[in-house]
Length: 511
Image (tube, rainbow, N blue to C red):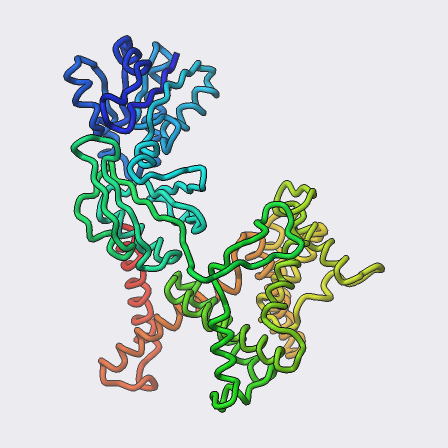
């Protein structure tokens, strides 16, 4: 029998009688950690146990720690009865317990769970929270994988140091206002140790008393005067009356002032056609910010792109064609209509079925009844590399594709051989044709390898520019001009630039 027990939130008087009896009777007891207020008292009562705290020193990350703990407990449980105890409730924010339960089921081991008060119960009492009004729990070490839900309260666990608090703060400020009032709670429910402080989010990492018993709570976001946004044809899964947390009215009002009497002469002169260049530029700047993984820049560039959308909608409104409300209502209805597996009764077992349903619904929307080209609506104005990938992906949906990248690689080699023959033949038009075929085949290889050609080619070009910049810097330092340098000198500086890149990668790996 493998018994998994909770030690409660921390106060010894809250240790359940069933857990206490199990501790007294157990001949093999493991604690995930000795860093818990009730552990010292257990020692005084003569309870013997082994902790896994040493795993936290040996392993590189928490996932490894939990895997080592689970493996040890399961191995021991094959030979004799084992009691494994964790802080709080065994099923609340305990990854090691999840791994042990899964492993026990696979090995045919019997398990017994002994519940206890969790840190959440203590937190509810301290902050006077009613969880039935909505509560979202997040791991402070996994915020890159999890997102807060702003409409309800959010509890952030694992905020055990100022360093973690700093990372948590920076991530949460991508969603919350910097001044959003936040509660930091330490040792909830433990008499003499309990501590609560309410501070603005931006000051979170200024506290110096974070430890393994610290939890952060963010109340729901409230926007005064936002009113309600009525949703038409609301399907199951969407709320009928949803507070408008991201109102566009201020931006619409701004555009009204810029285009109105006494506004900006340049803004007033613009048309849909004159703005097309800016719409394209802003889109590419968003892509650049995403490639750089600079979230502050992504936020800024999305704002610039959003301004272009509002600009076009305002021009259309002035001509009585449509307004921004029509744009939002239209895309919302379209997304609901094309996701019947979410908002209707359709079933989609995987993303492939989602795409097939999407294309079918899209065809029905356009009133297609007879045969039509599968590639007819691939935009002609896409960049060539992106358009090639889109065409290949489209025909792949009907099975017109290589089984894997090996066939595409062989095709690329074939196209390279044909290009060499065309070059030897001296036919310029045939050379151009074969170069195009080679490009198209390489795009196919990238797609089947799961690589975005547009992105990686941009990265490679940027890397080339960086290396050539190093060459130019060395030319200036040598007092020469580019035309005075030999190819051997340029190649030597090029190799130096590559070595510097490799050293930077090594530093990043170990930093």
